[in-house]
Length: 512
Image (cartoon, rainbow, N blue to C red):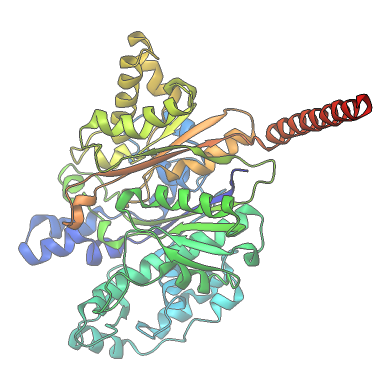
């Protein structure tokens, strides 16, 4: 039987100061052009926490609104606030920077995170009041130290500062004197990914309605890599995050594939459960500080706020078939192979048309497609256009070419089978998976039968190959009852055949 999606979570941590001090666009600009107008204007374009919470795409991400709701909002979204916007949503929450920094310190196992004692005292109570934050996580917090000591480490030992409202409140120290893989910059980046993954795991378990001990395996599919100079990416974010989330019965490993990583990981999780190797697998990913403010120059130039000001995370719980939850159909897998090539038509053909054809389905038989779900509010001003819409147009064009869609229906296809993008541009985060929570709900409610999740990845970024990458899979309504009914009929037929054969054999013996 196919594995099922038991639940999903989506979380955001509002980190505007990390945009300034840790986003690659900003850190690079500080080196190349330290007196640039962009850096001078940057701080005045940062959003308040309240503005971040009331932002429509963020409310969709945590489940307080649907993609259909967003489609009814006049574009652009940045200048419109969602009425009744809340920090906590159906799938997760938007955590303030102050509390997220405390979570980061709670995730630190090697005392590289130093926090100002006044800062800890001021925010510890609010952090502990978060319903998802357990007492054992709060107990991991340190009381903090004098700010002067933190300033000394930042100024003399190359530590990465932690800031709130422009004020130094802590730092992340280097974990080794000369190993660049354990530098303060890398430790900061990795701890932020780990902490956002922990938050997603906590909500994932809660939303699936399972016990923490039910999770037997965790797969981390973020875009970071931890290790030391002898094995730079050999570490294990999955087990590190599972430890803080108290998933004591779980082991785990990391899956990497740039933006396609989550889709690869979910297929692996579904296969592990279907094979019987594990009964319950959590696929998780934290955010990426390098991509904060990635398109900031274009946003500031056009008078927009910095929209890439959140670290994102997600978790999907994959479990044994319960006869109710939607299934991941491993018989319908799209894959961009080594020989596929990078032409857009070939890519969409390999990921969408080919697997459906093998299954005897048409492109129009999929109710909703979830490819790269980037928020167009972010990408359009940067000149990248509406990424989801570009994908839908290619899928529709392929359907027309295959004779499965009339040319007149091109426009309606993108609306009926497509979605408005709402995901933050955190690399792996937008790549198909933000829709899984909504797809699960809509399938359970009988609103649709099938959704296709399409993940794509730019393998050439690693300078090891020029290849593109991608995989896809279909989520469908549960078929366990149908399968069992079919199995029951065939079993009766087999019994009838056996009985008839025995009767004929007995008659032969009697005749002799």
